[in-house]
Image (cartoon, rainbow, N blue to C red):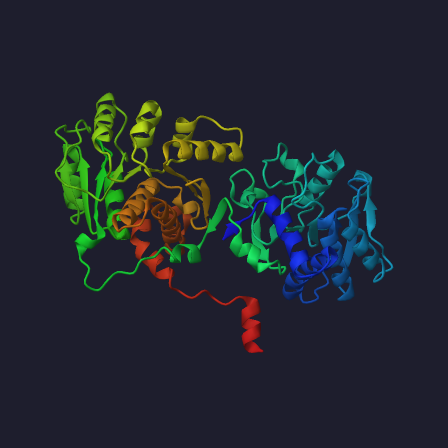
Length: 517
């Protein structure tokens, strides 16, 4: 799914008005009606107090359309206008007059804290104050209104985006943003829905189709893409009947040190479970017995040193190499890593953990990385690599710059892991808090290696691998829960994650109703 910028959304609105020969007021009517239909399908006329808070721009106009329909259908609704400035949009004024035609209770004008209505915990708040066009600080009394929403404990539904949140900035004061329980987004979700510092304001989210021009959706390129089942399904490559293990490449996992051989074991198992035809592991001598006994499917090559990687030398010609998990960053290992990079000019690399830490210690090594090398840092490893950042937008900007400079792909691990490559941003939709466990990153590295081994290009392998990793965990928690999930469980569910790609989704409430009719 494409995630559009604020400017692209405005362009899309204007183009729709032009191509469909409608007015902007007609488009606003569509938007407000869709919000009403969403609410009405779930409430079916229930007499719950509904407080609709409108701004004086187009987002407020959407709220007035909603309020009019709620009133017409007999809901218990109160409408308020947050008097944010002297400038009212044309379509807002049109719908303000339309509301006055269906009720004797005109919208209540709010100017200050003393005007705030009482809101009970059993009520519903619909937030239509600011949309994506907000470009100035929120007035103090409006921030107090947003806190009034939060303190009321009422369910809060935000339209398009929680008021006070911008599409391209992290708020300086979280009290100046509405904390939504649910967000109904027009056209597509926004990037801020998925960033650690801003996702907390969104709650659950859903996209509403308001009939914008479909050609624009197909023709317009976006910088950001949201990755779900249907995006990765296009990357899936079925196996030929007469293929053999040599058809799916040979993954080499290099890493480990005394007491940290488990990480290599996890990566190796994950690579094979993801579909690599062959897997070898290169480890210090102390890892030989561990790997041979715990993972008999792997071949093992050892360093001359008992406890550390000191000289990376093997006769195998792998399809892809995963490096760094459990390796440590001793001077001997760093020297071995540098020597290895100087001779490895073509074999694709996936670098994780201490491999990234060594790149951070000696940044000149970045110049030795083959094009399309994949790095998979967690937040602290990323900080060592690019330095600190003031907010998530600066973090993405720095990662994009590093990716472009060295022509590499970087996976920013975390909730909604983000893959950056070829100057594009890919936001993952799978995964859960159960992945916050030792070894889950080693499993991800192995999965990505397994996909590269099978012939996927580096960018697709990263995107697909992150999705499979998260989906495996999503399926596994149904049996283990968040707290008991461990990295080995994720490996065991990779097969089910593959099968899930071809599973038909459960019908929605609306689809079930249509089938009954």
